[in-house]
Length: 393
Image (cartoon, rainbow, N blue to C red; front, top):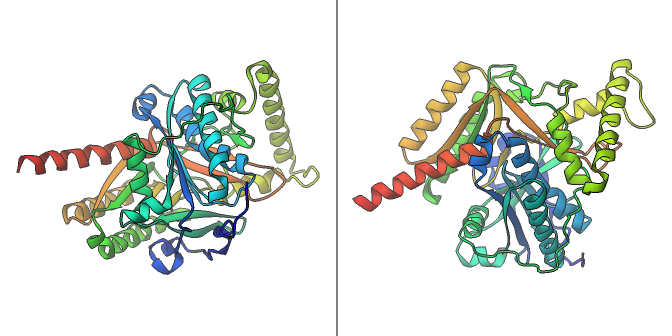
């Protein structure tokens, strides 16, 4: 990647440590005007999830992050995971490389996962010409990792443009396989321990309601904070040492060509067996500590985020779930927000681990039976209904 003067922009954004800071405008800085948003999502993800392919859908969504970051050779760029897709903000010098990575990724998703992926590169300058913005904050989920938060309305506009067929990535000579090193989905779905896993997407109705929307976000965070670990779906000690055969298969397809997949599956299973043994015996192996790694999986997970609106997958009991729904319903009736919500009994974990010897590995949480994708589908159906009603008036 050609390095420009703004390429270290993200490192200059100060971190905040309390999630309530997502509604504080002072925590956000505008992306440089010459940057781009690399965006991708799965077409027909709802049907794929209904068919039981939620692991493949989540793997495809997380693969956007790994493909772009690996191609650029830079793991400190702002990105956000959305379940069936993702977005990465990239400097101007990385556009051509990112375009090839996205095109390769689209090819791989089609051939190996049998899913259809949209990919687009949207200039931040075009977003600003529409009167919108892309501002970025850094939330420190743990001392080891920080995740980007986005506001300004520009990311949502860029996604709408991609879905409308604009800003498509067209690369004729793209490689058949992207570099997905570090991408994995080994953990079994994680059962709710408070009662139910709830995936929520809440968006402001308009710029005029932003102050009331920020109050709504604060109220939702306060409700979830009453649950153990602020409704985090993973215990502090980490997920149970239970691993998914389907997830291992998807990881093998992501990280090895067909001729090496059996060998790759065996290597993954050997790594898992060694991790289980080291954890059970509480023995380190060099710089790798299995118990510390498992605890870091929990600490580093992105179970809540802000992407022009609140997104969270939380573990709540019935009383707290009902309070969340009541607060969201009231805000929607009052014209403050629009929201989608999906309930399930497990959470799904997809990971990007450049090296298990460092503590900055990344873990993306979604509901295990539709999560964000079905919450977004519900939100889209509500919007369509409102537009139809307005058309009749």
